[in-house]
Every structure is written in C-alpha cells, then in structure tokens.
Length: 324
Ligand SMILES: Nc1ncnc2c1ncn2[C@@H]1O[C@H](COP(=O)(O)OP(=O)(O)OP(=O)(O)O)[C@@H](O)[C@H]1O
Ligand SMILES: [Mg+2]
Image (cartoon, rainbow, N blue to C red; front, side, top):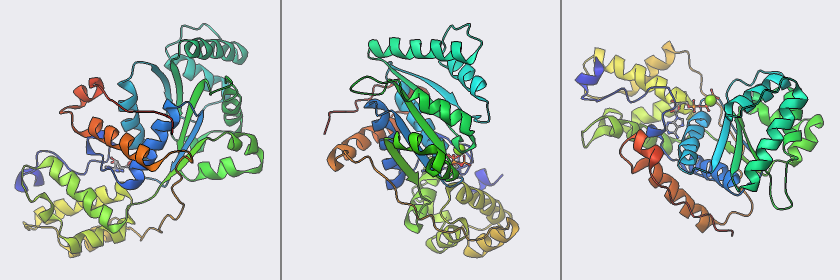
C-alpha cells in the first residue's frame, strides 16, 4: 500500500539478509575482508561475532557469493548448531557432497579427513562455516578443535569460520577453551552503526527501491536521529522502525516521516535505547592497509556492479591476494 503512495518498487526494509542491500560500512567492509582473507590464505580458524541483528548472516551470504565465484572452494554451511558431535559430522559430510557410508563418529572423521587431505593435495580449499555458533556445545567445539589439527607445515587444510553472538566470545574465552582460542587466527567483531552510518544505511535502502533522485527525503536528518536513538544503530531494528514508520506516515498521508512518528513507533514496539557496543574490531595483524583497501574495492565491485544476483554468482572476480 505505502509502496505505490511513495513510489517504491519494493519494500526497502525487509528483514531477510539480502546481499543486494549491503551497505558497506567500514566495520562491515573490514569484517568481510578479514573473513575472505582468512579463508583464501588458509589461516585456519576465523571467528566473527556481533550483537543480535548487526549483519553477521548478511555478511556471510556476501562472503558465500564471493566464494562461489572461484571454483576451488567447497564448503559446508551449518546454521543449526544445536547438534551432538556425530550429527555435526554427519551434517558436514553430507553438505560437502561426500559419498560416504560412514555411520560411527570414527568412520565419519576418517572419511572427512581423507576428503580434506585429498582436496588439499590438489590445492583446493575446504571450508566449514557455522552460523549461530554461540549455541555450539562444548563437545562439538572440541571436535572443531581437533579438526583444526589437519595442517601442513605451511597452512591449515580445513578452513573454519564460526559466526555468532557475543556469547561465542565468552565461550572461547572460558578456561576450558584455551586450546581452541589459541588456534583462532582472525577474530573480528561487528558493531552497531553510528548516526552517520544509520543515515547512509537508510539512504542506500531507499535508493535501491525508488527511481526518485531524492530518495532520502522521506527520512529527514531529525527523523534519522530519532531512528538511531531508538535502534541503537542495530540494522534489524532500523529496518523494523522504518517499515512501521512508513506505514504510519502513509496512513497520515504525510510527504515524509517525522520524528514524532518514530517516537510513536518506538513506543508501540516497546524499544529501549540499546547500549553502545564497545568491543573493538580486530583486523588480522599482517594485513597492510593498502592491500586491504584493494581487496575491499574488488569485493565491493563484485557485489554491486553486476546487474542481478544470478549474474553476480557467475561474474569473474579479480581479488588480488599477494602476500604482504
Ligand atoms: N551492512 C548492512 N547493510 C544492509 N543491511 C544490513 C546490514 N547489516 C545488517 N543488515 C540488515 O539487518 C538485518 C539483520 O541482519 P542479519 O540477519 O545478518 O543479522 P545477524 O547479526 O545475523 O543477527 P542474529 O544475531 O539475530 O543472527 C537484515 O535485514 C540485514 O539485511
Ligand atoms: Mg544471523
């Protein structure tokens, strides 16, 4: 309903993580580069954390789009992390497309290791990604630790990416996890958006769904300030507030969303001001700034310059990965 009133092609604030809508903040860029860098240079074990709704799954989908463009990466993507060790291994084996008849944990491990070593000999990358990894049990984390032991003198044979809410950091920092923690080669953290980024975020989403040259006019700066205040810069909350605000503004037949509307929406949604997330973003130590910038430009071009998602998946990407 409000779409035709405001001349929008589609809903700008859907809450599904769609890579087409990526707004590349410095933090999201750095995290995406760190994940990509960690995998392509076979660093072994990479961890991404961030508060609920900060864009972790979206980044993961962007990463997968990039990785699908190179034919040398096979991955298992686990998003239900509430599994026992045997189910965990069964899932990986199946998702990697292995033709294994293994039943017991030992047999599964044997087949998996064989598969990973074989691929490594052909210089192919094998990747395990676990989203919602804060739910992983201690037993499964221990299996993951053992899998990180698959290595040559130069690099890890199995690349592992764990993504989760800040509790994951807590788990990895706990006394029983020292061995696993020491194996983390790259660790990064997504922070909520600041007010300026919130403005850019809303503008980008609006630009993507309207032909109007002044897409941002629907959300004037005072309104953006109120949105940032109530959302704490959490993208999922920004989406929910903006979606509800557009409906409310449409009902009142207003030409733009006012701060009063945001106050009312926040009241209805019972939103409290979120606390600023103060953990620093960690970049891999060896990564030099110019190199990071080059990689990001390529990543960004690959994500945004191709016309459709289908062509994005098949478009060539030229990411230069020379050692610093
Ligand atoms: N940088 C961004 N650019 C565009 N949209 C974003 C960005 N970051 C997050 N979003 C949007 O915010 C919403 C939440 O993102 P996502 O589901 O990736 O969060 P999450 O960190 O995985 O949350 P959870 O901890 O609940 O799994 C999605 O609609 C996503 O598209
Ligand atoms: Mg998620």
